[in-house]
Image (cartoon, rainbow, N blue to C red; front, side, top):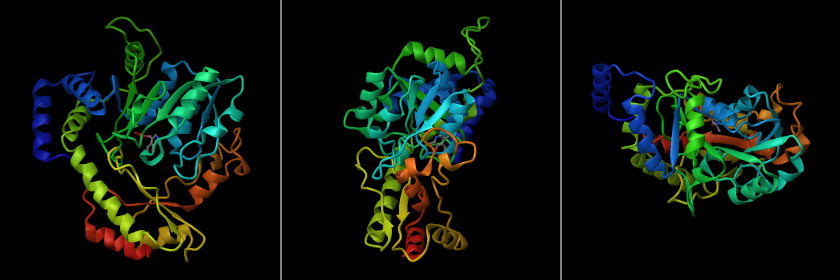
Length: 355
Ligand SMILES: Cc1ncc(COP(=O)(O)O)c(C=O)c1O
């Protein structure tokens, strides 16, 4: 969180102006500052990423089937259902935990209209292979980039890929506005449609052009986000030190596989997932319980797999035999605590418990 005194100053401005929402001055400033920070042409702010995902599919007028990953937070698949679309699951790659592009083509049918991959843990999907498939088959592509604030690849921001990318500013994310989210897009007309849709479909005071919803970010969140931008680089660099410490101390622990090294210039160090294998003396869940009993809340993130949840288990591609990698990863993963003010002594304690 930014320094409270600074936020109080922003609150005083809000109290004075009484501009609480509806695209007020903080919203406008934050949208512009964020687009510049993230180096993307357009940003539309939202009250959370789930709403942004739902609206993104409305904006692109997606129909029929959506090819997506079971290895994500439930909101990814739920947003498909809220649009009355049909999720179709494909497996993930073991090294990135992102959608495996070699599995996409066999899942395409005449009803497919969208590919919805997730940049899991801020690790980038194989955007060139996915982009090529989307182009060849005339499909839309929306990236769930909830974990990928500030992540870059060799060509710049990863948010430039696909038709749209969705960010989450939930309190648990690298960058937060208490709750919040955004859509990054490359096309001004599309941004306009998204902005209408998130504001009940209003194109002007009297003209309603779509059956929109209320997905707006309010001034308190926007003012908070604007301040956060001043501190995000420092927060990411602190996360990086903690990541390095975990990595150094846990390397060589029998039965514990570590995440691949991130490319240090372009990563956001959002999560530190470890994978608990058969050689480890405890099961993943027993380790989770042991940490919890010692006051350490690690997360089985993502577990259970979306495709194993009752409401998704009958979907196309959801069978365990079709998703061997995703099932294996979900049964082994444990994300260790990682946040900027986690002290080195706490990291030592966590590592000691694992070891
Ligand atoms: C991959 C992914 N997508 C979507 C969401 C939903 O974000 P929000 O909580 O901002 O609605 C999350 C949140 O954890 C997430 O991890």
